[in-house]
Image (cartoon, rainbow, N blue to C red; front, top):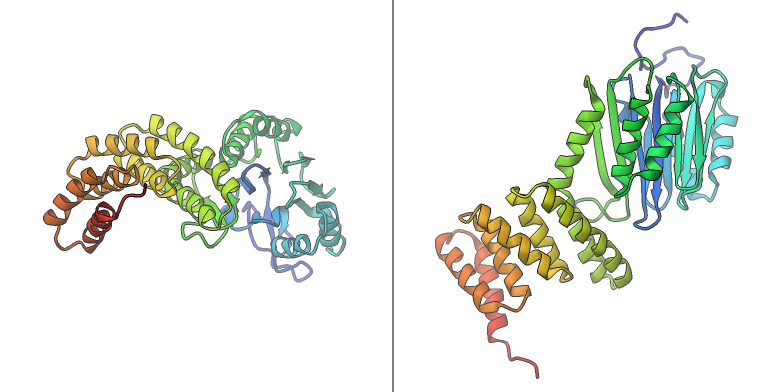
Length: 361
């Protein structure tokens, strides 16, 4: 079969699996035992690498399938992990039955953060990887072994959320030479139980750059948007849900992480009223960070004093702090100014009921 110049393509040779795709790349699997998060990050000189390489499921593990990629390794590997196979056994099961096993590269991490990877002897040089507890790095057509070593070192030394550590590892790999063919696409996927925006699914972060001259720069830009616009609501909702489920220790642990990140974001984006408003609302809903919620709500209101949603958040925070008279004053003015908004009337009614309720003691 003639060598095709495209870096990522479906193979139509009948002797090969219909799931086979050439995807030479570097990737990293990571696990955060503190917050029970599993993640995959990847970059390649290939179109839409995020649709091919990364697989992850909360409570199960993470997989990266690359080189002459067999996409079926993702779901099949997850099924084996669910059945109790360890990462090395998963690789043996998948590669052992694959006629193109010598051209595959595969990394597997289980729910405990145990990891293993495999590089077939037909993968194009430089190709290889390193697997350790909680982290697994691998790649092919790389500038050298230093690429995976620098990925590993960056993941180890970077502080903060799993996503931040995974992004730092990709950046380090690129600085070390990365994929010798260049850059085109990148992806970041992190999963955690009931941590999507609706609090039902496990896809916590799922960002893709399918075609870009500087995919890692673009991926980080997308992550920063996610951090400002979605993170407060995803994280805050999860804290509230854990408290509702009476999982107080886990709620407190996540709240501490959320509070620290909220303070960092408030310093990083001091004039982002919508971010401050989101942080204030979510911290108030959990009932665990009312002082911080009040601080952020006041800052947001100072930036956008005429915004009804921000004023409503300030009223909610005051209500949660027991300053019900002030909450009613703000909400009554809002309800009069926006009579078409039923949500403001409901808030006012809630505050009024609290004001008329008999005090304990």
